[in-house]
Amino acid sequence: MSGEEGPVVAAEAAAPAIGEPMNIMTALQLTLRKSLAYGGLAQGLCEGANVIEKRTAQLVVLAEDCDQPDYVKLVKDLCAEHL
Image (cartoon, rainbow, N blue to C red; front, side):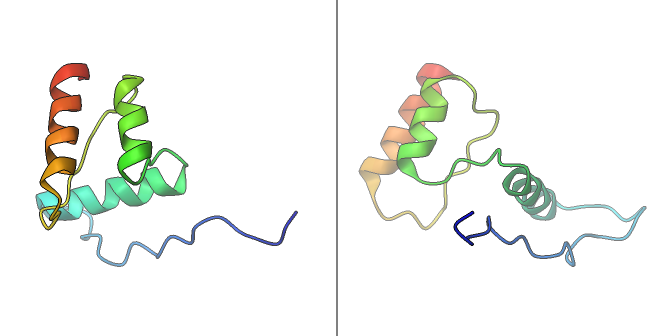
């Protein structure tokens, strides 16, 4: 091994207690953490576009603060075409 370890995932401290209602952002954060932990998360434009084109994407999340209109248009168009 090269001594490098995979990404470190923080403990799920923000998770609500059992029986408490969960809001949409908390649910999204938990889903993304679990996806990252199990190696099922594609990050970035190139990886995301490849997964969308292969039709293996189940959820596509685009940041609100993306300041590149070309990126936003590309992701939306790929999703409309392939999903």
